[in-house]
Image 1 (cartoon, rainbow, N blue to C red):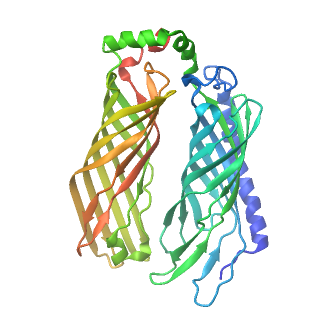
Image 2: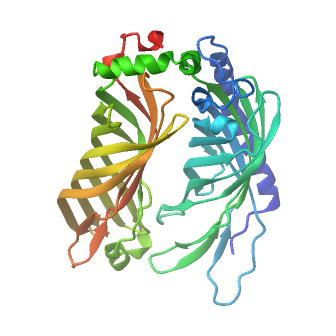
Image 3: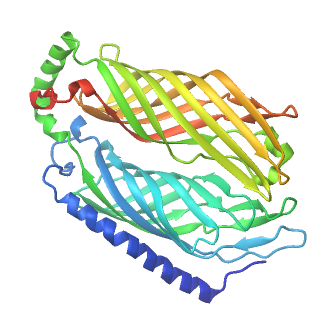
Length: 439
């Protein structure tokens, strides 16, 4: 059994905090500087009521967290070897937004630095927080939540194991003007897993299940100036006028970071090299599309391009996968809850898929697929009215059947769920036309 001593834990913890502070302060100071810009101001939650122009707002920030070690368990005869990891810290960049008039916060956390990782680290995390009492200026508010977390571990020449985890979250948040200060606690129940320490031997790894975090976010928005005209009816009059002249339809351009999550195990991997683990999530890639929006049916047509590679391997055996996809999707907006516009629709994708395995002696086997495959697109826009020059969109695409036939008769599955957490959608034809001033 491998144990981490108490003295080493204290030493590592000190270095965790020192490293986190070194990264945190420059980012926090930059946030405070930009927060002082008069062109962007925080969305008020106290006055005005639950209107669509107060429904959501963006926030940017950073957080730092330290993972707390646990006491090692006893190994019984015949049980797998155990390894318990010590404390380590992370600093992350946060991008997201408060929703439902201060009752919820959705954000994406991207790691910037990891300290004393001992082979264990986390990747991007999608977080949902619920506030029973909505966020108010100069008030302390508790929250509960959960997240979708990517956890990584590697030891020696072994595989880089990746797993999706869904930890529970709790904490308190303090709102001061346009700034959010947060103290949180996270708990990951699924903190143990099996790991191949050789091609034939598995061990049990126990990662820290608890962590403490401190975060800072800067809130801003650009839509509340349109609220007055919405209430007086001027926005409605202008919308009808522009729609009658077909000026609300038009070309759209969109771009945003995306990640593909593999949702199905592959029989091929389990047969030829189970010790290399499996593909779980790709690295971040750009989702780029060009589309056309039709106002009357409230329909968006998109031509979407994505491409990414991913690789896994251990003990001399490696596997590389590559996907290129050009997809056509038609998404229909189904509901609009105070500017929270939900959509769904089919997608037809031209797929180029390739899987290449290389063994320790340099031998290679390869499988390919090229052709059309269906999928499903769903998500939502933050759309306070129809006169915006740009919107923010969250998109998920699900492809349930993307098999690649491999030598030996077994298949590798590219079945994925693509998550584009925040995408910027721009109407080029509205730029410089004064839509905002006319509201």
